[in-house]
Length: 610
Image (cartoon, rainbow, N blue to C red; front, side, top):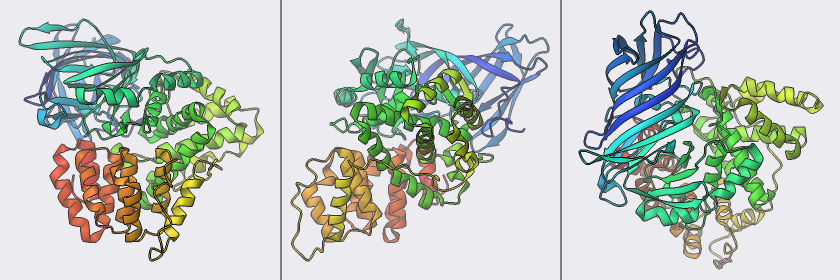
């Protein structure tokens, strides 16, 4: 029952037989909280002597598996259960051809970790239920039997039947032949002609509407949020065009954005043709739209060129952060690119030095996931340490004029493929074989050393200086003297600069309680429409043991499920010993509203069993 030699998180053996297409014909049942029907896997023998097919599954109810061409029912068994899935072994007939189809009749479980089912009361409209998926890293196996490894890429199609009044969307091109069917249900059909890895199969359904925001883009959401989303994401086409200038043609056709209910655990998810986004991005001033630039960048970095397994996750996320900041630099100026990196550097330091510890193996760029759930390894490290490595390489070879053409050729060379860090290294050394400086790269240290990166860029800090200076003034104010502030200090600041001000306040000694009270009085930070600002303000308060920050923290972790905010705030509250019970009680009250991945991670942060 060994796991795949190429992927420690999967039982599948694509070196023996690989999936080339997936078709789903499923019925959506909001009473049972299940998807049920057929999954048809088109497979190709790589090894002609193969006698079985190995798939990944998790809490699936599998009724039968047939060879589609003959209808012959095949024997199968499910075993090797771990916390993140089981092995599904299907016995093949002796005369199975090289290309064959397996038809699996199955149903998901109500506890499917890839799906969150919401009652009408849990939605903004309050009239219809809602469901959405999150398959990354390895939750697709709980939604369908599959080779759940990013090493396997396949096209897919789907027919989904849902109750009338529900609109279904998927990470694919919508076919406009949806028709009413008998018993008050409608069928929605989709096609994804570009081969993708299993974690990019995505589905969402609810009482949702759309509004066009560009020649190839719509925003989708419940009616209550569609205008806000259209405004905040109105720069989407500019992001796409800039990304194409940097990376090459956009191959996915449509680029739509779905704003999900608040329990969605991530800022965004790069599902092709349909980015999933958290409503915490809707700030009313476009200040959080950088996340959309990130998800657009994934159209090349992660979706087109993919990490072979999650040990090489930095190839997805480090590249995406790097390209995201390139997009922002072109649209808003090079100092903004640097400022974006400055703004996120403290989160890298906190994760490395406090959350994991500087010698923790999970702080490596290339990690060993044998026996480790990829969800447990998830952090900002592959994002920020990975992008820092690319910043270093760019500087080493002479800057963007030299490095950007290399990246474009890299995407072209490896498009539709899944690769390892060594494959990137080999191509980099081949491309820059005539550049003497590349011999200086210590690949072993970058890939396999724990702790912070061995290099920190010399950032242009022109947008950060005023933030730091103001933070120093607040930290040095002796509150028994007259207040030197009048509230106008941040009037010219953009949202990111207020975040940087708060980052600096978090790094220094805690502010005095009178200073915190005065800052709230003058700046009204708790009332900001930008959740990034409120989140940091709460953390500044908790660090100073300011009791006024407790209800703010409880409110924020109770009304949204984004792990970026949940996990630090729960850890902060838990670390405040006198208020630890608040963290535990709040989690117990809200855990059933969280998606599985967020619930499990926060439980571990609070030293509770998942």
